[in-house]
Amino acid sequence: MFVPLSGTDITDLEINCVLDVLNSGRLALGPYLEKFETIVKDYVNSTYSVAVNSGTSALHLILRSLGFKSGDKMIVTPFTFISSANVSLFENGKPVFIDIDHKTYNMSTANLKHFVEVEYQGDVSYFMGVDIFGIPLEWDNIYEILPNEIKIIEDSCEALGGEYKNQKLGTFGDAGAFAFYPNKQITTGEGGIVVTDHEEIYDLCKSMSNQGRGKNGEWLISERLGYNYRMDEMSAALGYAQMKRINEISKKRKQKADNYFELFKNDGRVVLPYIPQEVTQESWFVFVLRLNLEWLSQFLNIPKWVQDFDIPIRIEGEKNQKEWHNLIKQLRAILNNLLKKLNNKGVQSKNYFYPLHLQPFYKKLFGYDEGDFPITELVSSLTVAIPFFSNITFEQQTYVHKIISDSLEEIKDEASI
Image (tube, rainbow, N blue to C red):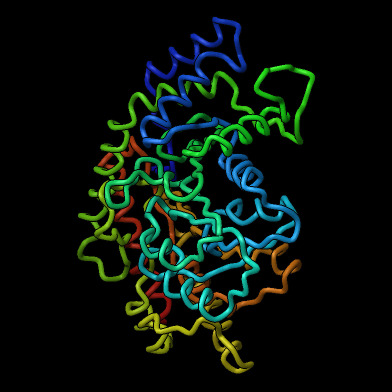
């Protein structure tokens, strides 16, 4: 059996909507674009929306609309998809990384508080809050910790449909973004959207997404620097049809997640996703398992302070850094061995995510090294995204569970030889 990592959920409704566009001859800037923007903003209870060609484009437009410029700094997690930080580099700015919480994998509010109280000098003006894997940030604490002058962008590209204390994700801060790649909750093929309650942000994003054109629609006159970030009409039609089914799709994905919780509930070798009590509606993007350090310590020498995640903000000192490097190297070797076994047995799986600060060009640009954000590095060396999508069958999920269980046993046996 082969079980893919992700898959789409396309019905006759989506096919007919896309065919409607193709038969109309209106392939760009047509009625489905407006329909899609409207259905999304209404769903998340936002005033305005701008559909674009990717979540990355949506985040970039928000930054631009808020006045981000060369030399500006933006707080962001190092455990996320790379575009969350890259958009600051698009404008010759700089990401300021804050390490994560080991339970939620979101930015640690304790570390953020430490940064604001100890390191912040009034030189950071933006905050990119990422709801990783669809799990919301602790937004109440975020608002309390951040100085008022810092502008907030919510990267909810992985979190459509999720709620924090009955408020839809994407609606915290000045503006939010969703993404619609085929592995997301819904898809437009490629696509993203800006949502905001601020008219000025909306006007600027709308203009900049369309080559800087003004409200009058004059095609060859640009009022400002802009981009071709538009969403095409076929993508909008697909997204509109998917949004008509969003409640059905969300329910299916929650059921698939619940199946995995049941299958793995007694397996102490892995740690299941953590759902904070403030989550009033779950949003399932991927299903990520974490190898349990307590289990790994049966055949690896893992210090107790690491097992307990009692880890300093940075690993400092040559001796400590060397030991940390060796430990992460060992853990990642086991993770890679697991991934190889799973993929060879037909269970497509990937490591989610690799630390941003250790990406080759980030190391080259900013001089980052292992030990700079140790929780991110440790979690990254332990996490694996397993097959998860709306139409995965229980038979497939049972197979995934069996292969993972067998592979973990093999890894322990190999380490004991």
